[in-house]
Image (cartoon, rainbow, N blue to C red):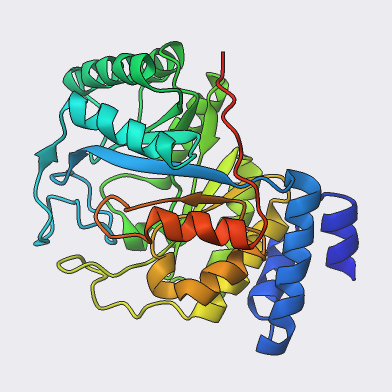
Length: 326
């Protein structure tokens, strides 16, 4: 009753201590928590579901050591460095728009973009805007102030830079850069007027308390969007033998993140197919999620786009229509 009054009626997210309680709920209490999270989503975000496609302009060969990522050049993973040319990016943007998606995110596996990559991004943005009506987002690692300002001036309306995990657990997952460096880029993105997309990757061995810590830290950052990823252990990475997260724990996390951030776009992202399956995916959409990435991810396969779109139809959830930022 306290959570219902606080989050649903007053629109105030749960505290870190309250989130721990949600993450510890017994199985029989989970449906009620998901139902409350769904009501919160409908009241504070509306019924529309935002659809996005993502594509990598540069895959693999990253100098960072994020222990979950097969794109790191420091691990013996099967992913190798590949660059995508501009016509392929434009084609992918068109295919993404054809699904009804309003968002197209260009991703690069880098610590941060150099001049060559920034020039390619500018050229890609111009070509995509000439060919298709879709909002363009980018995820290019850590940025300088100049790069942030350039992206904003080029019409990038949303930038993705994930916290990934709680501050207290971050050094166990990444050693080549700090949590504070990520926060710095996030702050500059918001200052420049771009929407901030800042997500989580759960199931990496963190405790429930650290999961709650991450949700609270994201809430304090107040991003426009939070992609929620579930670890899909990749061969050759330090986390390749990590056990896949339990589906009910994933649903508890979905409810908790929604109750922490009543007004934030909460997006299904990587790993949901493995962790939740079809039934769990449906439960999450009825438990606080209001956005999805359709198609494949950067190095793993996703659900077919039609499967997600058909599910939204079955659930009577309208797809958010394109409203280009001017």
